[in-house]
Length: 75
Image (cartoon, rainbow, N blue to C red):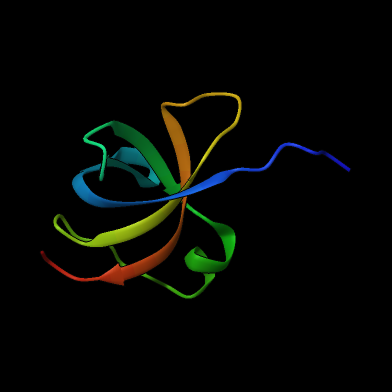
């Protein structure tokens, strides 16, 4: 079992990128690359620019993460 834990952050989708990647701006104005988590992808969630999302940031690379939840649409 790994004792490292991914942190959850709220952000806004800035850009849709190839291969299912998204550029997300977090609330602290950091920009990270993210992809949809498996359960979210299986639910056929479609993200658009401006959608609010919840992300887990990778403990290995602070510039990448996994989108775990769609919070709201178009701020």
